[in-house]
Image 1 (cartoon, rainbow, N blue to C red):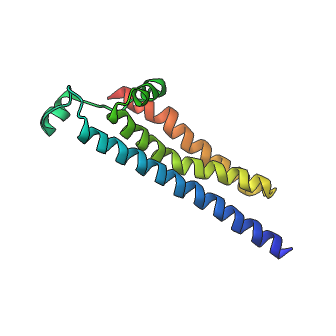
Image 2: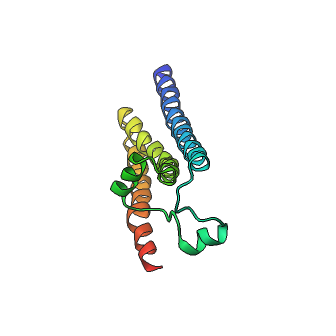
Length: 137
């Protein structure tokens, strides 16, 4: 019986490790591709200095997913970089969600409940508190 528990714990660690590894890898590839594309084909409206960049609010991160995906589809390197950052931020959330699934597969109700609570806190922070605070300032 301990081999079954030990084996499933190792499988769980492997799955969670893979979620983190591939999430960070995908994020790094997207950001690197966006930065390289930005240097190779700088958009015409791109500010010439850091001061102009800050003053104009150029490429201010968007919370609008359809706008983000549309920008990526059009090949805008700034939106590709932003997508990479979204993937990077979503990676730990995906890790927690994978933990919920893995604990549920093991029928470990206590850890499912605890991990679901953590997932809900993360999602409320991202989709309720974050946008609310962004609308204030």
